Structures are given as C-alpha cells and as structure tokens.
Length: 273
Image (tube, rainbow, N blue to C red; front, side):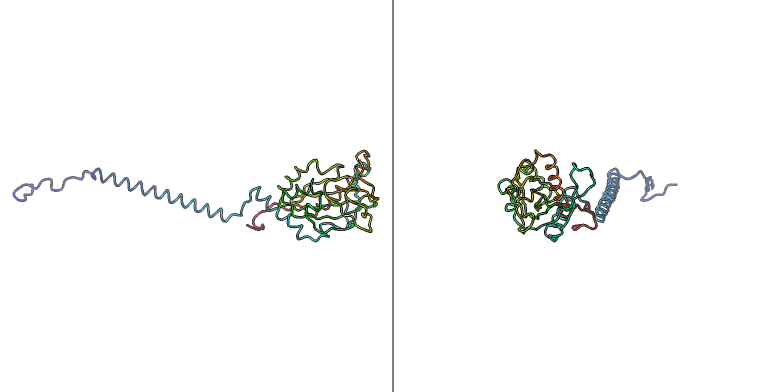
C-alpha cells in the first residue's frame, strides 16, 4: 500500500539512479586525462633530469679541435720550460744517407754552440721568411749549430715557436718554394768562433729546408766547414744526398725532443676536466 503524505500518495520519492548529468561526467573525464598527462610529463621531466645528471657525472669529452688545442698547448710550452741543452742535445745521431751500403748505420753529430733566443724576423731571412712567420704569430726562434762526425758539414737548426699547429701549417704553405733546395733562404746561420763552424755564414748555406713538428716549425741550413761559398750541390748526387741526410737528420733529432707528441687528452687527468 502506498504511503500518503499530505493527502497524496508517496510515489517516486526515491527515483531510480540514472547516472551523472552529462556535464559532470565530461568534467570528470577531463580531470582524469589531466592527471594522466601531468604524470607522463612528470616522468619525462624526471628522465631528462636524470640524464643530465648522468652526463655531468661522466668524464668530459673533447672534440677533435679541443684535443688539438690542448696537445698544442702541452707541447708548445716546452720551448719556455725545457733547458736549452735538452732542446739541443750535446750529441745526437742521425740515419746515414741512402747512398751508403748499410741502411741501419747511424752517424754522430756534436753541438758546437747555442745562440741566444731571437725574434723570428732576426733569425731568418726577414723579407722571404721572417715576414711570413710574423704574420702567423711566431713568438721566438731558438737556434743551435752542429758539426757532423767527420767535421765536414756544419748545420744550424732553428726552432720557430708558433701559437699552434694550425699556424704552423699555414706558414709552411706560404713558405713552400721559398725555403728548401739550394736557394739558401730560411734560418740564418750561427757561426761559432774558434770551431769548425767559424766560417759558416749565410752566404755559405748550401741547402735549407723546414718541416712541421706540432706547434713548431723546424728549420735547418747546412754547409761545409771549410767555408766554401754556396754552390749547386744538386749536381753532385752523392754530396746532395749526404748533406740532405745530415741536415734533415740533425733537425729531426732536435724536433724529436721539443716536438715530441703527447697522448690525446682524456678526463680525468687533463687540465680543464
């Protein structure tokens, strides 16, 4: 029997549940999607942050250009820090010329004297060589003179300290055809009074050349100890080979000290890591 209230039957007092109104359901779905999106963004942000922290904790990586700059700096400081007697050893050996029968033979050379540090313009032919070196930032020229084991040849070796290997290569390209062969241009000689090198002046340079050694441009000039003037030694195959091997060999031996390469920089262990 239906309950009466106020004289009327109590019907549909508690209507059956027909679901949320459409607007309320839509708002609920939007809140749910917003929560999911916030969670996803939070997880992504955390992953990015953890990745950044991981990269910060890993050893620093150097680009090829950075590696070149660091090695140039390491090798390039030696001309300031190494004693002159270490840059230019008192005695050294160089390979015998190919015209000799024993390819493994090494010949000796002795240092006669070391010159005072000079500007690159003062220690080279200024117009042909010095101007090029100055244009590429040459800082100083170190020179020493050697005599071979037979006291026949005298060699002046010059080490031009450059800002880096890039400047060395640029200067070398400009000097191609200027330094080398029998034109004599290049490093100026260092004669030493009272020695077999006493007569070795610029006009007596027979052959000259230069080559790169890291941030250094290494020069040599070679002549005879008897003071004979410059002659076209290329006409004499034996003399040309012997003088080339002596000059280049002594200069390479010097370069092996001051221009010795260093291992590629890695972290830890390298300044700046």
